[in-house]
Every structure is written in structure tokens, then in C-alpha cells.
Length: 349
Image (spheres, rainbow, N blue to C red):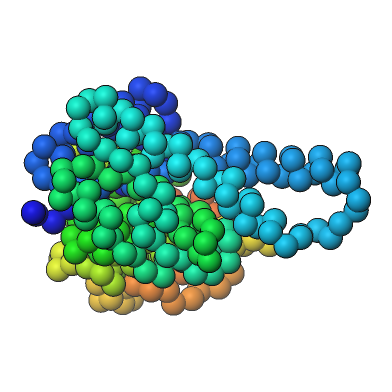
């Protein structure tokens, strides 16, 4: 049997019955070519609604009952169980749709999938995966549909950090001996900046792992930062796909050349401060460019509060109110104009 392809479906991909049916069709197409494991997020907005519901019930019970401490033993575990139901429902609905299309599928929660976790509820980390049951299903031609964002800890379900379904998919790919994860998202793949903030941002078709790891650490939300770092450690290839097509928009893989790649990311740090980070795949691209970046920000009347080294880049702290403008200025310098100085960053390919 060939190595399985792991397909991670984000909340937007499963947002409606029509979307679930469409993704089941995608899985069916892929499964016709080889073994597939699907990893399901909760449907769009469901996690937040479940968290809100848990808080509402807690508040109502406090008003009726004897005053108690802010947090009682078991509260976090019960909230995790509430929240984890979102992925259970999504995985079950997807398996139901696949079976209706004639593709044998079985939904698995974290315990059934052999995903052991450690750490606090709501912020656990995957410790190890025993993929025996998944492998058995694959050998029988069945598509396992695994709940993302979950682990099994001390006989109870626990949830990972937000966005943890990305990590679930990559960890499963590594445990199964595969090296490829298809991430289906309502996004435009990897880009030189968040297109919602910088409409002029450009697609990045291919990038090395360390570039994505640095970009997500700097605040880019194309994939969870922990997931990007795990993919780099395990050598798992990531392919980003849209809701409309199986063809990858961006591929992140070991050994990919990063010459000329540059992107800019924004992170809000609180207390009125934001960090705008320029990430480049080649350290020589940053040599001599910093003064030009600061000059461009100064010309745009943006205050540079501090400059700091970052993984594969330079981080500039600016007032939060000026953050979006600073992002656009630095994007223009590093991507659109080819660099603010003679040694500036070349255009992204």
C-alpha cells in the first residue's frame, strides 16, 4: 500500500451541508488514486459558539447556586469536552457524506485514532500517536475521518491550542510514515502579506520550511505556528488548496529553493504596540536593508519604537494605530519595489 495522503479540512471547508458534500467529493476523488486520511476541524464558528455556551451556563449556575471559587476542579475538563464536540460532529457528518457517495469511511475521535496528549486542558500538545487502527482501516480501503484539535489525556479528551487541527494533520502524516498534507482552507495560499490588509500581496508558489516557520512565528495565520515548526522538523510537505480546486496554490517542502523570497507579517502585541516583521529566505537579502526600511517608515510618518532580530528576518515595533500602514510600506519596499536599498530584498517569485 502506498503512503497515505492526509487532507486537513478547515472550518470554512465544512461550514454548510453543501460544503461538506463538496469536500466529501474531493476526498472521494483523492481516495480513488490512493489511501487518504481526512482530518476535520469544527465547522466555522462552532468552537466559539460552544465556548460561549459553556460560559453562559457557568454564569447561570453561579447565579443560582452557592458562591464558589472562580475555577473548580473539573471545570477545564468539562469545557474541553464541550468544545471537542464540534470536531466530533464535523468528522461524523463528513464520514456520513462519504458513505453516501459510496466511499467507505469511519469517523474517529482522538482516543480511537490513538492520539495521546500532554499538558493543560485547552492548550495541550500531542505527545505521541499510535496509528494502528488508522492503518488497519486504510488496509481495508476505508477512509478514516479523524477529529482534529484533540488529544487523549488521562482517560479524558483534551483540546490543543487554537488552530490545532493543522498540528493534528501534520502529526498524523508523520506517524503514518507519509510526508504530505493537503490543507484545504478558505484562503489564497501562502502570500507575501495578508491579502485582507495588503491587497497588492503576491502569491508564493513554493517555499522552504524554514521560511513558513519564520513567517507564522511572526504572525502570519496561513497555518498554526506550532504546525509549521512540526512540519519542518518532520520533513512533511504542505500543500495549500482553495475550496474550489485540488491543485495546490502553494507548496512548502524540504529542499525547496528560497532565493528571492520575502514576505511581511503583522502581530499585535498589546499595550498599543504591534510588530511588523520582514521575513526573507536568504540572510544576505537583509544585509544593508534595515536602514532603508526605517527610512521608508519615517518618510510615511510612522514611529519606529524598536528593532529586533527575528527568525529569518527583522522585527520592527510600531504603534498599533500605525501597524497596517507600516505593513503596507514594508511590503512595498521588500516586494513591490525590489528593496529600499542597493542590498535590499529582491522580489518574491
